[in-house]
View 1: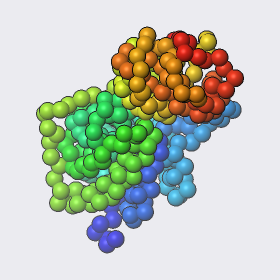
View 2: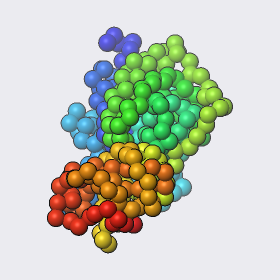
View 3: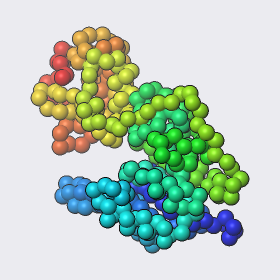
View 4: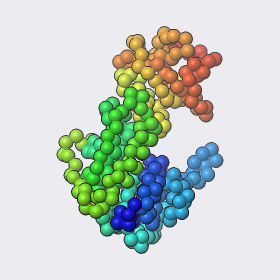
Length: 321
């Protein structure tokens, strides 16, 4: 990389989706004088504090990291916001790249770098603005998804688009599999297009006014399966909510998570187990039926349905709540 293409890029992100982009920026030779990520969170059985995927990547590369609890100067932690503001000013950035950071960015952050801030968003804007674009695209049955690199403004994912890249949705895509493909695609798109945009050779374009939709944050209450819904709707939601929060139902008073299902023939009262081949759990839905393929008991691990059924008295006519 020539000296003229080496830029000072700040980075704000938290999960694995952002980690891939940070690694690509550093590997491309850009200077990353400052990384922002969310504070360490308790995780695992022992609920020990765990650093984010972005923090782990930054520390492994010797990059400076700060973890403000908020960036709002008028919020609950103004001292954190003031320290972050000072650190960003001292970093002398050409641009701030944001990817799944998870904190609200106030207006002052948009001007903290010479060229402002850009965002790696996991959808083809203006479709699926908001917090959960990957999950909502699968849930809606979209035929394709993608990545949009955009200039950030004060709206919710409303800024002008620098570049976009598309991927076809596979019929068995879960949020986990699509996430990994989009993370890799976003990293490549960022590295390929950011230098041209910074040099003024790739002007951003306004988003179309049509096809705007919002990907609202996933609520855990959405995880409960309503068997009265069509089988195709439930099957898509199962894939959309894998790995979080996972769809669930009640069997004999126990909560069971459903991780994989397939459309199947059959009719009956919604939630009723239907006659099916041995080792298959077929359930009637509001329209059609589902074969439940991978299940998880509370405190257990994911298992194939044949292993789940072993020793359990689930027969045709059993009702799932």
